[in-house]
Image (cartoon, rainbow, N blue to C red):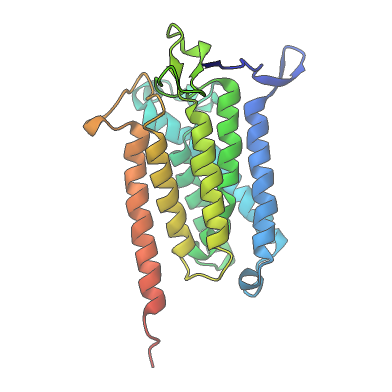
Length: 271
């Protein structure tokens, strides 16, 4: 049995404050996105339709806004709506923690729509370009969760070699799954490998986005079985967590998008 190393959440101390590891992991996530999206913009199928490094920079700008605003608002209103409706001023207190991937995704989708509208590109043309570049950011942020010792897993068999005690849980030393690392490996690294290789060849517009939605939804749904539900929510209907219920429409949307893109690509051209 292991014990969480209890990292100092502040990576660089500056006076009474400092730079937190969690903020650094977000910067790393954005940097990885910029690098990978630039590589994709240079692939023949994207370069041929005019994608440039400047486009990638602009997409990142819209994406950062979407992640930060959507992630924060998603956490506030998906997970603690009652509290934040009564304490609207606390919504801006991002330094106290609280970000939602599903909210961040909605924010990013809105940002991509706005970018595409301004540049005369279809939504799925934009989302297909960037979808394979997102999972590495998930790896980085989940490692940030692990460094902070937050979002720990459910109780694990004590003889599980990597079962870990998280002192922050104040649970008397229960051995738990390090679910942050499971998520980094699954919806992060594994999803990146799947999408990167799938997207190397030209695909029908929308297919890559559909695979991302399905892949993330399924992998996150599975990982939630090992992650401790938020104590203020517990398990919801059918003994599923809030995260799992948020994944259901994501999976269904992914299936629908992939099917639509495939059917549209197979439709014979009109004379």
